[in-house]
Amino acid sequence: MARFLIAVIFSTCFIQAAEGPVSSQYGETAKRLIEAATTDPHSLDRLEFLCDRIGNRLSGSSSLDRAVAWGFEEMKRAGLENVRAQSVKVPHWVRGEESLTAISPLDRNLPILGLGNSVGTPAQGITANVVVVSNFEELSALGAAKVRGNIVLFDAPFQGYGRTVTYRVSGPSRAAALGAVAVLVRSITPISLRTPHTGTLVYLADSPQIPAAAVTIEDAEWMHRLALRGNSVKVRLKMSAHFEPDATSANLIGDIPGSEKPEEIVVMGGHIDSWDVGQGAQDDGSGIMVSLEAAGLIKRLGLKPRRTIRVVFWVNEENGGAGGRAYRSMLGDSVLKHVAAIEMDGGAEKPLGFGFGEGEHSPPSRAMEALREIASLLTPIGANQIQRGGGGSDIEPLMEAGVPGLGQLSSGAHYFDWHHTEADTFDKVNPQDFRESVAAMAVMSYVLADMPDRLSDLK
Image (cartoon, rainbow, N blue to C red; front, side, top):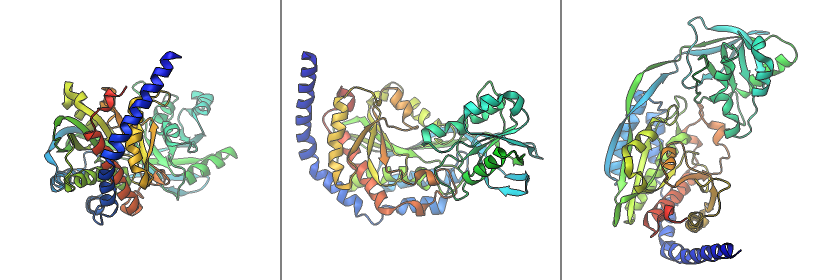
C-alpha cells in the first residue's frame, strides 16, 4: 500500500508540474499553430499535385521515381534543411494483365486485383472449380482431399482490418499447403460497390507459391451462395504478375535543426510509395504531406524547438518495408538519439489524437500522462485522445530499438472503403480534416521536440 501511495503522489506531482509547462508555456504556441494550419488555403496544393500529376507509386515504378524527385525539391521549398535522399533497394513487382471469368453456372467477367507479390498463372490461365470457405477452420475441415486441384475462395466478412487481413496475408500459403492451385480473397473492406481491394501477401517458405487475387464482396457472396446450394462454380483466372530485378529508390529526409540539442530527434512521416491503383491519396499521400506541411508551418512561424524535428518519406511500406529497415540501419547505435517517432498512415479523416506504443495492458506511465497533457492542447479541434497501442510499419524498427512510437489517430469512417483501390483518389480527402491533421501533427511534434524531458525518461 505504501508503494502504491508513493506512486500516486509521484504521478500527481508530475501531472501538476506538467500542467504548467504544457498548458502555459505551449498554450499560445499551440493556438498559433492550430489557427495557421486550419486557415491555410494552400495546404492541400502539394497533395493535389502528387495525386493528379504523379499518381500511384508502387515500388520500382517510374511514377515512384518521379515522386521521389519531386518530394526532394518540395522538402527544400518547405524550408527543411539537410534534405537528402537515402538510397534503398526495393522489390519491383509488376501486376501485368489479369482477369477472372466465371464459366459456370453462367458466363461472367468478374473484377479482380491481384494481391501484391503474387506469382502469375500460366499463359493460358488456371481453370478450376471454386471451393468456398469462411475461415481457416473450414479450410482445415475440408482437408487436402477436397481442396487439391481447386481454387479456394476465402469469403471472410470484415471484422476489423487487423482480424480480417490475415486471410489475404497468409491465406494463399495455407490453401496451397492443402493442394489448392490458386486463391481468391474477399476484399478486406466493410463496404463495396464491386470494388476489389489489393494488398500484399506473404508466402510461407514451406508451402508452394500459387496465384492469388482479391474479388469484390458482391462476387464473393455470389459464389458462396451458389456453392451453398450445391452449384458447381468454375472460373478461369489469368494473371501475368511477376517480379523484375530489385530497383533503387530512396527515403527522403529533411530537418528543422534543434536550437539546443540538434542531435536529439523527433521524426515524423509516412510512406511515399502506394499500390499501383488509384492515386495513393489517403494511403499514404496524406500522411507524408501532412507531415511536410506541419514542419513547414513550424518553420514559417519562426518556431525553434530545442531538438531537431525530422520529416521522413519512407519507401516500400506497401510490399516489403525496406525503407523503414534501411532508416533504422543507417542510425546504428545512435538510434536512441531519436526521442520519439510519429507515423501517419491511417488517412486524413477527422483527427482524434494519437496512439502511443505502450501496450494495451501496460501499467500507467509518466510518458502517457505527458502525452495526455500535450494532447489537451488539441482540444479545440477534438484531437485530444491518447490511446495505448500505436505506431506504424515504417517506425516499427525504431520502436523495436526502444524509440517511443506514436501513430496519428483518425475517425477511420471511410478509410477502408477506399483502402488499396482505384477509389483512393484526391477527392476523398476532406480539406478541413486534412488541415486539422496538420495542426495535430505540428503541435505534437513541436512540443515533443521542445519540452525539457524526453518521453523515454518518463518511466
